Amino acid sequence: MSNSHLLMKAGFITSPAQNGVGRYVCQLQRVVLKFCKNNGSSRGVRDFIESDLVNFAKDHPGVVVYLKPRRHRGPVIVAEYLNGEKQHVYCRNFTSEVVSKWLTLLKNQQGNHEGMRLRKMWHTDHPSIQGPWTPYTFREPSLNLAEFPNDKLSSPASLEPSATDRLIEAFKKQQLKELE
Amino acid sequence: MSSLKRVQQWATFARIWHIYDASWQNPFQSAGLLKKYLMGTYKPIYHPLNDCGDHVVVINSGDIALPGDEWKKRVYFHHTGYPRGASWTLAWQLHKKDPTLVLKKAVYNSMDGNLQRRYTMERLHIYPDANVPADIMKNISNQLATPREVPKRLDHYSEKEVEEFPKIMDYPKNYILR
Image (cartoon, rainbow over all chains, first blue to last red; front, side, top):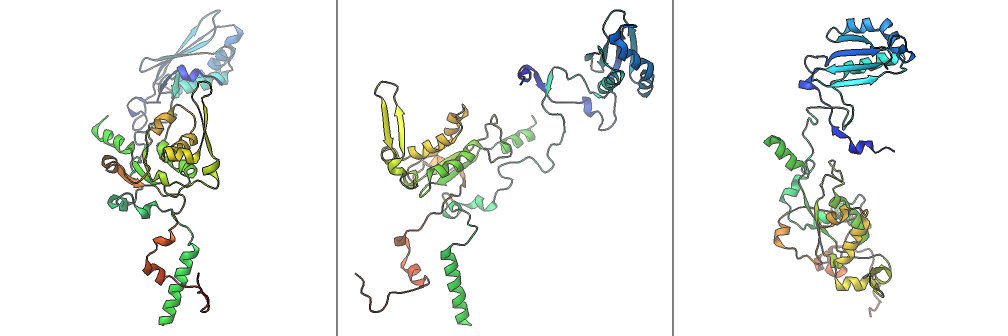
């Protein structure tokens, strides 16, 4: 198995100023699609531009979409975020559905987490409602006044009565019957 | 960290001092129980890197009970590293020399052989009898229940208890006790 996670920087997933709790602001600022006009590796990007790009741009008016036709170069999507981070995705030989999925990811992200090991895929400001566990959470209150070492606490919790206990109980019952 | 969160951290990672009475107990069975508290695996916050182990004070380690023939047959091997440095010590011989070692070795050998073992063992305090230093007794806040019930010696029953105990059968009247 790979050990690349050992040398990666590790961080928690975050959103700037609790984005989405109240108002949601799309963190993607602009997206640049660079492609070649007739090379085969850019075919998927070109198909995407012809079919879904305009819908994407209309659905997200806050994101600026740039198209840069660059001859004899491989296709790339470069995404820039509001915090200044950049992420590029090489789209060589992608289909248009794959390009569309990548764009959705870039739009939904709160920032670029590439090259970082995400320690948890979730974040919450209130991980515990009733309060985190302490060694005193489920502690018997009688222990507070106990003197140590204590014979009663040391004996194991008996689930079944022993033969001696049963005998004594039977004797007590017999004595009660005799009294009646 | 705010002061509230700092106090919460202290509460969650508080180290508890437990006491365990080893008299009449099987040290190998006790080792499994003590290991759980020394490593802190009973805690929901357990992680090997968390340093969440508790202290355990064991008393009466001189009164442990080994099963069957183990006192005569269990052997502890030691080699000094030098030629002809091998020695085989029987359990009763080791117990005579140092009454805490049989239990200590039982706990040590029950743990995984990783780098944390030596540090975890530092938190185990074994005493051959019930004399524990006062400053350690002050810290103790919990008692661990023994896996085996301690039987009561027949000569430790009071006369009153013997009289009140239900008699199931008695010697015949003609019987002469030797």
